[in-house]
Length: 453
Figure 1 (cartoon, rainbow, N blue to C red):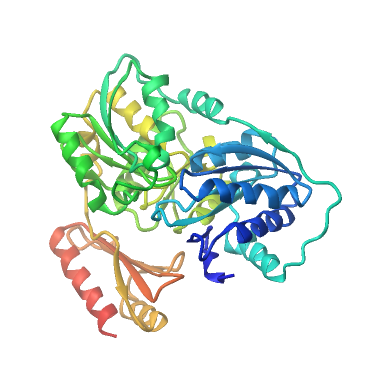
Figure 2: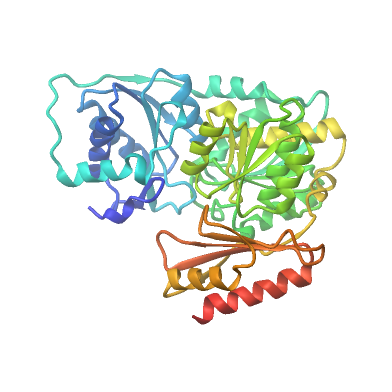
């Protein structure tokens, strides 16, 4: 077994060379032990390898004496929903998110959508598989079929407040699991929506489309063009397992994912003044400002869903947003619900009667570099040099290093964050300033240090 299939937050590899029926059977067995489970909900995405892998996962679980609730085709938000709505000890989905069709993998959570990551169970699952010394069980578990979708749609539909507003939306699913989110628009709120579909065909799952990754802005080209040609109110792009979502405004412009956090916060805080909202430390300073302007308490968080969900639980946060398009809601036990993010924006448009571009403009206050990756040889040395060179700023080591000069006079305010990749010899730079010239100057200054050492 290739140990590298065990990532920080999930298990992922190429089928069948790296992840196959034998390995996933053992993942099932080991998961029962690590979760100390008597009943587990399972599902899969629509990849061609998914059905056989799910069957072997189920066999591994039931051979360990644990019952299974088989949900079959699900999105990842449905996985998290099932983990707290069903009487289970955990939930597992066979999915490789936005990765190409030749990949597959596994996402695991405990009851109430608590993630199982590298330090919270995945390494234990890996070690059990390597040891290959599973206990014999006298009685096998039972398998129960269940359709989670109707209760999922019904539960999250209650958060929509579109009144008599009519929307024209373009939805790009990249022929992946966002297709399962379409009934919200086409069935539950059919009177409110005219839906223009882009790549919404699961018969060609993970094929005949662009990469299902709205974080890569090049994947939004067709969506942007279609929004303009159709004169739509909003463009929506789901990622491969529908736990992330990207947005295009009615003018065909991409709305930065961190600014979406601010817009959602604005809506949620109308009835939740004084509540905590988390924003990842790469986000624009405008996100912090908009949370506080609307009566919320803004707390920074580090990158990664396991860290964010843990902080949400500890602090009682009602919502968290990540620069990568993950949006976490207390309403789903701190799990992602991409369509609830869509509903919240549409609620804001309904209430204000303003186009999304005008609403987002309030958060376009500063100049952000976007995330810039640099391949380097000595990550620790570079971080040490940056820390020393910019020691006159306000320092944080929440995630990598973040140094802020935002208390400088206006026109000289800026901050940067540099984080090391866990899997590659790469440093990731995010930087923002209150004017474009300063942003460009500091970006070039930092990249010269990072890339010349």
